[in-house]
Length: 347
Ligand SMILES: *Cc1c(COP(=O)(O)O)cnc(C)c1O
Image (cartoon, rainbow, N blue to C red):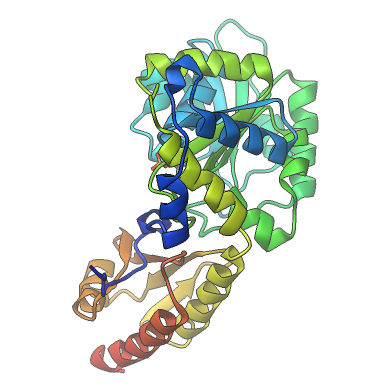
């Protein structure tokens, strides 16, 4: 059945295309806990090669790949340095404490991006009173930062700080694909500077489920043990991996279209009097702040009446995310309806 709603709530809502469904139906599968699922093995190999890293592990979610990574890099009582808006801190159910028994040093970044010098000043001194700084985690693109991207030069400086201070460096790259397209970067350069990278297949790409954690062989071997403890050892999940392989082959380049769609929404929003500000749009996320007289839930419900779904991420902030299942016609209709809502708002 065709979904008539225009769903901008998240890029997680994408569904498999006919081509992806065919790939899934034809997948060769086996028991992955025994290491015998050919499709999962192929996806893990393909992703590791893409980043020029030794190994990868397929997991049910990006929360799991992040949490496994944090658990593998740390000992109880260690401290993790990250931006205050990080997904690993805000949206993973307190997993850093729950799973890894670690504390967090939160930094106030620029749209979710932290700098090498901020990190350097956040490192704990060698003092029995203090936790041990162990891991730095970056998010690219930044979700709460409105899909902002890091400058790669800053990441390289962060790597230098990590090397000097024996800190591991993890990347929450749930939307790294979007950053690679927007900044014209390669996965290989990311593989060279991070100890571990988490990427999602379930955002924008059409896959029903799946994330991968990439790293060196001994790290991924340890990750396999932790994945089992977390209950993430799946069996004939090759059907899902086949969707992932299809997505990597067919749905990465088209992210450009999502970024163009996001800038069309941004330029419309900038003309509307009930919009106070729009966070700079760099990829597929559009976050905007409303004037005081219009609460975010009120705008979201007016849009819903027009079958346009958005997400109120704060009392005065709304998020729109573009993705595979948003067509140019949907963007046209949304632009039209937003302008009409403007009249309703009495301007
Ligand atoms: C979506 C997301 C994740 C992973 O979310 P899951 O729903 O668990 O797959 C991780 N980090 C960021 C920044 C995200 O946006």
